[in-house]
Amino acid sequence: MNSDIEQFQRDGAIVLRGVFSDWVERLRDGFEQNLAQPSAFAIENVGNGERGRFFEDYCNWQRIAPFKDFVLNSPAAAIAGQLMQSRQVQVFHDHILVKEPGTSKATPWHQDLPYYCVDGLQTASYWIPLDPVTRHNTLSVVLGSHRWPKPVRPKSWASNQDFYGATDEASGESRFMDMPDVDNGDYQILSPELMPGDAVVFDFRTVHGAAGNIGNGRRRAFSTRFMGDDVRYIQRPGRTSPPFPGIDLKDGDRMREDWFPVVWEQR
Image 1 (tube, helix red, strand yellow):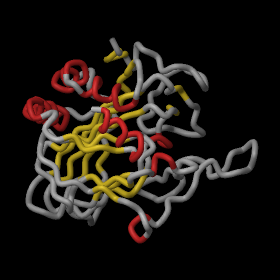
Image 2 (cartoon, helix red, strand yellow):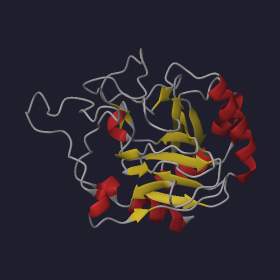
Image 3 (cartoon, one colour):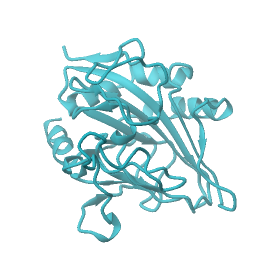
Image 4 (cartoon, one colour):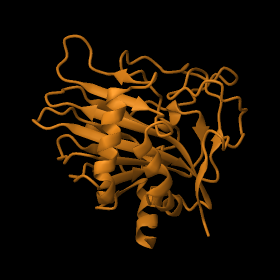
């Protein structure tokens, strides 16, 4: 495990093989329940005239029994705690994504953290495929991008407009850096072939994206996101994603445990 921790801290991402094989069918059941009963946060990302389906939904673990079982009883939180080097782990939220066969819509390069109402260095997000994925439709991560000097400017995937304002109102300086040309630059990109039960675990600050799914099989993925000791609430200058309306916290507050319970503690 020590080498895994070193790699996660250095690269901002790690691949785990077969760790969740016993959970695949349970997660598939939850996935289908979620598809049948989407939440208010559900998003269809494929527009008119585009082929396929790219669907995602958030924050369902407390109402979808298999997801709740995974969050509370799988080894995910314990592994996250060790990788983050955290004494405690809180669950942040879950996320499902499906790209049906023939979907050309890509997931653009981005960091998750700038879209969230949290800030901190001890974070871990799981991307667990529920179908086999190849290098052509897998999750890709830019190794070391969690150590870039500024967070990357968040964009609306539909309009490519700034998600928030471009500059800090007090200083007039940009709070974000623009996304570099990752595809044509000198970056180390991890694009692993994965089987159901494998996982990519990455820091909320790690740049990642994914191609479409133009093959013949579905590409379902289940994500859970965990927070460590140093994570605190941050007031963003606009609606976050997920939005968490009514959270009632101030900058620097610890995330409230009634919404984001502690699911693992170091013994």
